[in-house]
Length: 161
Image (cartoon, rainbow, N blue to C red; front, top):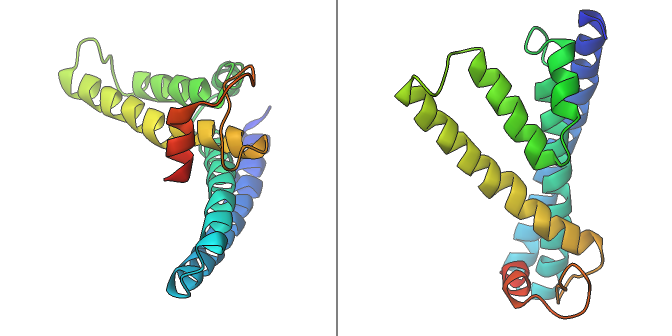
């Protein structure tokens, strides 16, 4: 992939991100409207749709960042994309980006920033992704374990909240 192709992907993905942010704004307005109307059923539906949108937006932003012109070389992009999950891709991208700044094993400030960013990825990418997967698999009220043999009460509570 050439620098021009990377830039083209970034431009296209930036358009996707802008569109998803418009959808997010509209969906937020819908949720607020139903909150004012005290229509908790609609609030619940729209909130679950919002979680699907949130995950789509986070993936779109990941691809946008990954293809930022002059950010990563094509070989680095391939290495990042070969990770097993989106969370692993974010973590790999973070590590490669930080290596461009310095060695976190020798720089305490860089190490603390890396730890903070890894926790942020866990909190804002990994945890919402788990709920999105449950919603995407039709588990809108009761979540099941990975084998679908019984309810997962902790995740059900997180979903309800």
